[in-house]
Image (tube, rainbow, N blue to C red; front, side, top):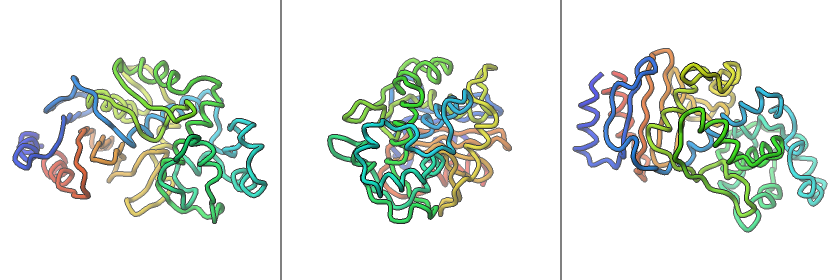
Length: 287
């Protein structure tokens, strides 16, 4: 590993990387930049934190991914659906939304009611499991989980995930109707995103305390739905022989348990280049 060479690439190329950390066998061994001071947007990495919340509820038998989404949605919303939409959603279990395999959905919900927009969106082939990355899937899982827990999901995450991980500073957003917006809209420090990665790296344990079951972590990080990127679990991406937490502008936490390695960085780079990843793989992973 040549961490200095990775940092040198960041500096020489003026990549807008706020900070980065490397963990070996669960221990922080290298860091650069702003890793603890400022909160930064993590965008879709929010979805992985939602997955952790799902896992806690599953472990406590309060949420079942095999049940239809409609099982957990507000009754007043269900009664206003057309019979066709009700029939379609009745055939779609939570697992399909967790794995982004519902079908061709718009990228994000819109309007004054995200829930109405999402539930009225046509789903042409509901029985066909095709990967389609959409914030609507994560949003609906968050609403369903809120109903299943009968508590505010944002507060649940604060108490059951952030507090045990020692995360005391954060921001998150809500939809116009007040539900926790589980698809995006969260801010954390680099170091605190690493804590989420460490929880998964350690199969549900954090500093000796169990937050998630090992069974859920295994299931959530396995390939549940194939895609062109190599596979997707429960709001978690497949990456090489491990997995990753991803945000849209290169917010990353790469978790490689078999190598005993984890790399986190928060950036804001609005392009499709792989230069930062290539540098990380070359200098940190030795690829």
